[in-house]
Length: 429
Image 1 (cartoon, helix red, strand yellow):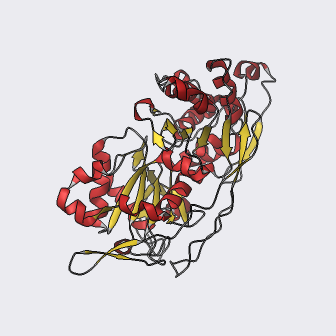
Image 2 (cartoon, one colour):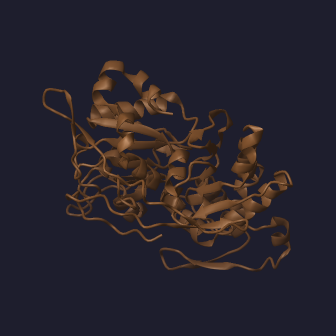
Image 3 (cartoon, one colour):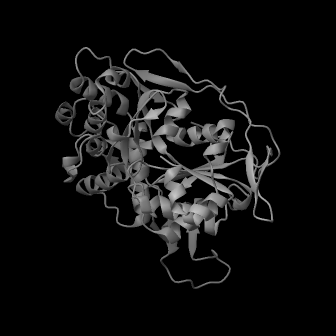
């Protein structure tokens, strides 16, 4: 999906009329049209100098939406169709001694600059499997989101909607709220479940969202707008694990990648070259000399063999990596089987894909094949693969934060100061 960047800073404007994104369906299903009628005006909660909350209809000061992905940060303003800012969620630190003045300034780099100069840096992701492991670096990333290079706005002037995967530790949510209220001094905040936002982006109220991102995969059944909490399934297998496995397989093929910056090269190879085979055993029996060529950043061209389909096989067969997690098709099937009998047919016929790892070539077809084997014979299995699914969580957050009815869901700073973390858990799923 090609992103169109809005202006460099927030200018007075009315919320845009969204295009109607199309979705590819697997399983003999007609094309789905997403309604744009839910993009409406909204109110902005702002704090006066006296500390009291005042309600102001300010179209220019819209809520900020930040999708905290383990591998990619997506951020922008509610009402926009695409995130204004999207960059790798890592922090780079120089690993060489500075000998000359006037060169690259600074020792710590975030976002596109870290990606641009990654050969000079040691890269570290502050999130692992959807959980923040380094809060100092995570705060740096969030601060960069508001900087002149990205959203170019003041966090004190905008409510913020944040995302997190299901079944995250309570402490993770509490620390997130603490940083935004006490460090960034936001006037209001809300932390939403990622899968619910993915469903919002499709204009549906019923479906089973399978979100497969960089750090975590989860299956969340939602029926008529209600997330069925006891059915939610999660597995800490994602795109980064596929990249790790790809690096090991490439080493067996004679291509060695050691450093953290070279790990990003492997990630790019994975995104460009990998595919999922419908029958991995038959794929192994094909011409073993068949390869694909890839040009490295230094111009070297390497030939990549069976690792192209062996690496993403980890998503369906985690035991190949020595992991005891279930395959993503089993995670999805378990989520449906735990739901009420009366809901299962609707869930089987409304599976929605979300997350960057679902963009691997052949992902949808392979998942459809695996689920058809597990599902009862009389159930029709249909899978929706929206073209914008890499950003569907953010798009859903943009829609939700734009709704006038969502105003009462915000956790205001006054509520946070009065109730502390209790209000964070009470007002979020």
